[in-house]
Every structure is written in structure tokens, then in C-alpha cells.
Length: 330
Image (tube, rainbow, N blue to C red; front, side):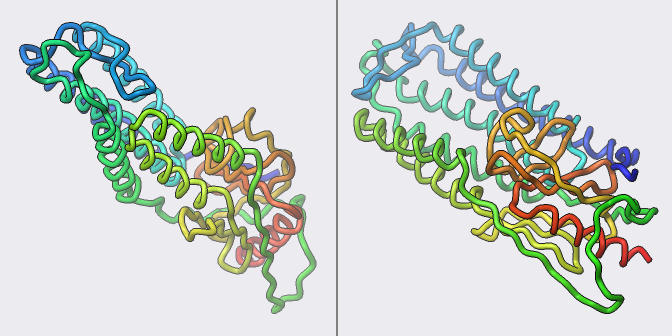
């Protein structure tokens, strides 16, 4: 049976280089934020406010040293974790982009939140006099998201990696005449993830109204955009290969016919295999567009890469993809 090959040496080096670079950058961002905060020590109250209550007033306090240790420690753990995922599971460009963007986003968001909440306390003798942090949340949200997205977009894609062998004869196929053309289109949408997203959006809007931290509305708006983009996809198999595209047009991913090793049907468990729903990176670096539990289309491709899409009638899509890939190889 034909299986996904191991990533070539150049690809492994690319994974390590991207993972190491974003990890170092993430740690550097956290260190710079801590250094800036230390220069403010003389102008900050002691202790400083670390938590704001329902009325937008400080109700939790710590020493500056404790704040910096906790902030840098938590941030470093997250950066190292996402950096490791990028290094170990970055076989495909899509995975590297997600991993790199997430690593940079985590570092920037935590750094900006820390600096923003400390900045509103500059010049105060008592941290209880600090104002709201809506502006800090807004700055942290926008100031971290935009650079992270740019990092993901600017990372180069994978070079062509044509398969050396035809599709396994054991793989399912559909009967097609020599010059006959065919295409298969499926859709995948909704699922439990959309319900969880709706709850999160309602909670954020409620918190914004109750606390007066209007920056939370920006976070809620961003979540709306994310769920619009991530919870409805069109899946197409034709003579160009496999194309999976969001209803919003982006994100999207394409598997050329000459990189297909085998397509098959699998049973997908989103939480167990991918940690949730949406555009995910699963165990072993498998790219997943998983919106529900059940039948999915698995495509194994060259370079140790694979993709899973939960879609109805995945068997027909898999059989046609095998047929078209095999015909192209001949």
C-alpha cells in the first residue's frame, strides 16, 4: 500500500528553521516587554493592579516583579510550545504558517497586554486609582493580530514535490473513459464548533456591556470574522487536484494531482485527533479541516504531508481523486 513518504531533508531543515526563528522572536518580544516595564518601575505604584473587575475597576494586585515573572514565564511556555509544534509538525506550508503566526501572536498579545495595563498606572501612588483597560485590550488585539497574519502570509509555500510512483492499485477508483472529464464538489459546514463560537461571542459582548471595557467588542467582531471564514468550506476534486476553500474565499489549500499518493475515507474525531473544530493541525502534522465528527476525506501526499476534510460522500471524492491522479501519472 502506498503511504506518505518521510519529509525530505530540505523540508525538515525548513521546518526547523521556521520553528527556531519564530521561537527566538517570540521570546525576544517577551523579554523586550519585560525590560520596558522595568524602566517604568519608579513611576509605578507598589503593588500594581493585575485584574480589573466587572465595573472596570482594579480588584487584584501583585508586585511588579511577580507580574513580570508570571507574564514572562507563561508567555515563554506558550511560545516554546507553539514553536515546537511548528518545528515538529510543519511538514506543509499551511502548518508552518499557522504555527508561526500563532507563536508570534501569543508573544505580542501577552507583551502588549502587560505593557498596556501597566501604562495606565504610570504616575499613580495607588493602583486602585487606575482607569479602565479598554484601550489596552484594543491595542493588544489589533497590534498582535496584524503582525501575526503578516508573518503567516509572508512565509513561502512548499516547492513542487511530484510523486515518483503511481497511486496504489488497492486505492478505490471510479470508472472513467480515457478522454472523459469529471469533477466532484462537496460542502462541509456548521458542527459543534459554531455553537461554541456563538457562546464565546455572546459572552464577550455581555462582558463589554457590563464592565464598560469596550475593547472586548473588537475581540468579538474578530471572532465573528473568524467563524464566518472557518466554518463553511467547499471541497472540489477535478483535473487540477483537490481544492478546499472557505466560503469567505480564504483560507484555502490545494493539493496538485501529481502530489497525491492515495485518497481514502476515514472516521474523524475532532477533539481526540485535532483538539477541536475548524482549520486545525493534528497529531503528526496532519492538516485538518474538521467541522464535525464522522466521515472524512483523507489525502496522503508527498513529503510526509496529509490532509483530512470532514465532508459527506467522501468516498466518491476519494475514488475520483485516485482515478485522476493515476491517469495523470500514466
